[in-house]
Length: 290
Image 1 (tube, one colour):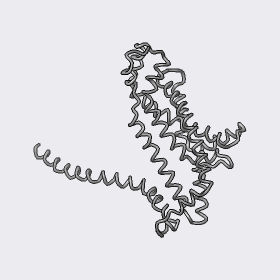
Image 2 (image 1 turned 90 degrees about the vertical axis):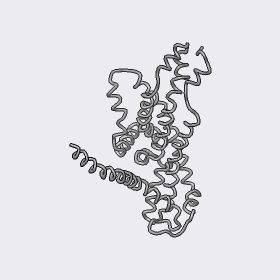
Image 3 (image 1 turned 60 degrees about the vertical axis):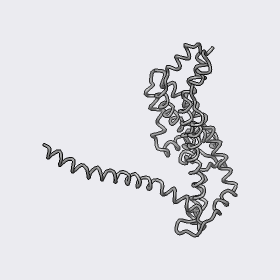
Image 4 (image 1 turned 90 degrees about the horizontal axis):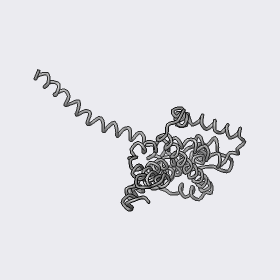
């Protein structure tokens, strides 16, 4: 018996050693596979040659040409208007929807949830074509309005999922404590419930913003003439680069969009760290909620 145990331990030691080596190696290879294309894009955005075939020296000319063009600033303005408006609407509606799903029971709740999450499962091409056909049938001119409506449609499920996850970690007894101290429903909602949910609400908004800002497929089908967002502008630049072979401006724009997408969650994380939304501060300041 002791010999069998000794044999098993002697065999398992090399296996554990291989696991300790292979697991970090596997993680490193997967990470490299995911981020290598982004790094290549960023590096070659400073290439004077403007292509991926060879390195011809460091240059900022592609950024200068990109920033000097009016099309970039016009597309950025459209993207910011569409994204900011749609994220604001979806955050408010998604938070209300998540609160209703978590706190109340009603007939057809499960069916409503399944329908609500459909935009996350339906292919973007199908969703984009469906929304385009809907706007045509309703005779809504395609433009900023249709882009906002489309972006609200596919960002609301994201907000609902994130806020629901936050609600599962909330200590709801604080609401009862506020009621016991004399707060009405409106004051409890404003002073206790919203601060409790605020980290989840901000996280949902920060996740929905790049989701909306970087979307191309759905946006392409619902955008209108003369109102081109950044994602569609990038596609137009790629089509032009395929004819000319110069990818410099595409690489520069892709780098700027990537940095924007990465910096926004970082700023949100710092905001959450600097300002902790806690209703406990309200209870400390007041012995009662009169």
